[in-house]
Length: 335
Image (cartoon, rainbow, N blue to C red; front, side, top):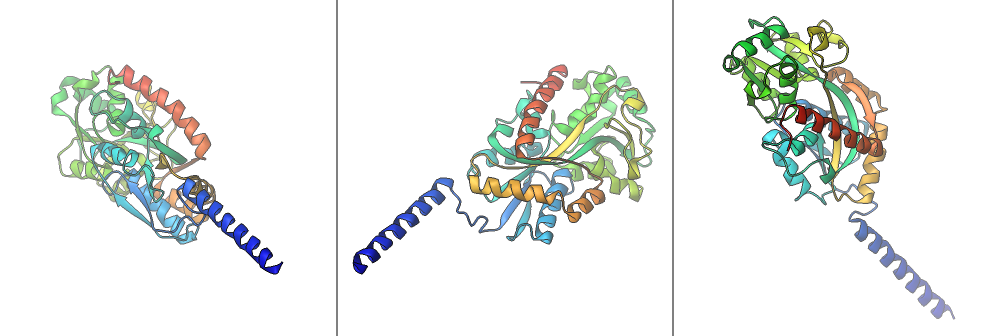
């Protein structure tokens, strides 16, 4: 009888093992996730908002031990984020170890007419919105332009004599931030001379190297250049004046331009991310935003905290997609 009982136990154990293996295989990731190094990609050059956000997430997760496995950050610039977006949506679609930081360009690039991306937020798994930022219109410290009005007057007089630059492709975020005041001022947005760079850091370098007269960029990332005395910020796209080093900078509305533009930033997983990895990251991100270390990163970078979990973030993206389509339509730049 003991022999029969032992055999029955052995058969039951094997059956349970097979069921467990089958469950792990169907998910694509075992319950031990993560087992390898995780990569967060900033689809731009170093120094811009995506890069700084990715590094802040990695640093905080590693330092607090919220994630035991190492997290590395990779820069993959090109097309204002569109080049890596195509890879993320296809080759990395099942890669639980590849995450990506993005912002409004994930919506803009998929909806604009020229240089558009075939892929958008629906080709990812949104995990969380983490921050809120705003656009800034910036010139060199010794620029002849003393106000946003000065820039707009110069463009209206002769668009060919003013070069606007940004760290994203034509029709993308920096471009929209830069031409939105011009559009509201009665200038044909197509006449504005815009030069694109791969990331905010490169756009700042172009400004300081006299390859641009004005740049549109993120308010948070320009603060260090304001502190160093290299640049002046003429206006920001927020509803109210910002705090800190930009507290004296007027908003678009204060400059007579009835417009605003919010730059959210969030973390995305691949479209076919396993349930195990998805659950893992939604739990970890919930905890991340409560840590003192993350709050210190927000303050250090001049970011506004705005957290939405995966479900709320997905709903928000659906709503924002409609707003972007309306804006592009108004600028005659939609698909």
